[in-house]
Image 1 (cartoon, rainbow, N blue to C red):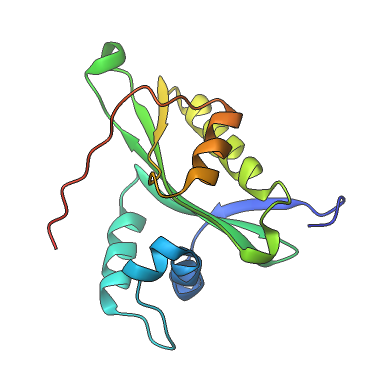
Image 2: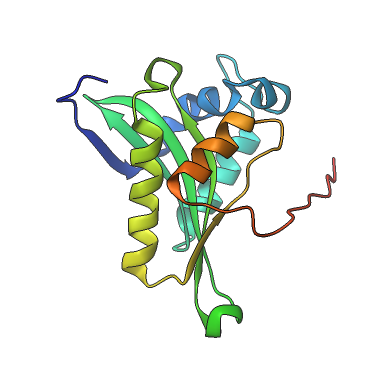
Amino acid sequence: MHRDAEVTFREAARADLPAVVRLLADDPLGATREATGDVIPEAYFTAFDAIDKDPNNAIIIAEIDGAIAGTLQLTYIPSLTYTGGERAQIEGVRVAAEQRGNGVGQLMITWAIDQARTRGCRVVQLTTDRQRPQSIRFYQKIGFRPTHQGMKYPLA
């Protein structure tokens, strides 16, 4: 990213899906669980359509000069905790390889936090795999704290 390059944000369109999937697969963990190629599985389109129809869910694209520089999913979750306050969940954060280390990731997370604050959310949460120590350090540098023990139960 050039110093004067502007990062813009928008909701993903269905046509962006192959590029988003490539970003999701472009790391050692993503490469083991995503299916890329000239034709991506229909399941990605089904999931995208469900996310796109849900007003509490969005796939976000970060662009620089019209090129996709990163993506994330932002989900708003109603909750009884925090005095009935809504929470924002950030997932699927990826930055294009050529943009890593240029501040795009920090801009993306800051943007998502600002969206949550504007909406009135009481907390922003995310998970990252323990096998991604750089990501953990990155999120902690921004201000996230490992306050809870996250657990997953794989069904497939």
